[in-house]
Image (cartoon, rainbow, N blue to C red; front, side, top):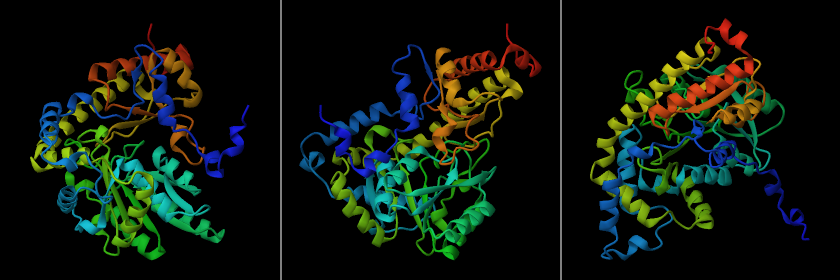
Length: 419
């Protein structure tokens, strides 16, 4: 037998499986499981007919480049359209400051490869997006968590953590944030804090990585487009590296996302990308560009916002009806997720087995923490993928598992016992 472990690199030995993907795989093995773990967009909202027509128009053979290798930076007309998207978001940018990536996960990987050396400190929110944790961990970064408040990252804790790390002689390279309807908490960083973060980055000589996949999906009952103004929009020094994606608004299968950064950085991202996949898919980029050019995405966004808002409401109503005061959360003002704290003595890492037996899955809180403290009673519940009736059913199943776990007496004390 070959000892393949002996051939693995040091980096491979430190790689960890995504907690989200691990739980998602459970759904493939359990019949009738309600997947409240999956942070997928709603397939019923994909513009199937429009994509079919656009793709057919690209496959006539009149433009052979549609199936060829393309430029590493991206399809030129799409780059031009992206400058317009960024302008609408309050960010003036040139095409030389843009690069199209194969999904925003590749963008995170490029940022980590280009900007982080092993041992460098990357500051992240507590909790933080697992994909970013994986990308920075694979680059050998030391990730240190910063607490969040109701309106996003705790600036006082940020100053404390930065001073602490520097006093220990560590080099702090980046702060990674998801300012709009964060994955997993659904939190929205306030406008005041966004401006203060730009000032902080300049004062402390740190770069900010702003990951914004959900900003277009604000809910009209609690948010406006102004609330999602990028941190990058107030970045006069080029301290913010901005990432966004079409995965949540058009379709993740296209794998089309982008980075906005100072030209000197995008040039390095380009070289790194050449070694990974040479270029993003030529056909995918053309389909996305046509959806933008024809105004399909702009017309579709209000419908998407209404759709996900109604699903959020379905989840919250059922949580209140089924679990009452046993579960707490902050109402998300956009995005895909409810970040729920379950009652003691539940530990969501252990409780997931009982939940799956009841036919429902969630993502455990520990998947999102670079430091374990405080993660045990948290669960990320996604309302984006299942239909509303399945969301309600999934929450009912979760509630039944909770009542079974804590006992009917405790449930009755909270006024939610069921026969």
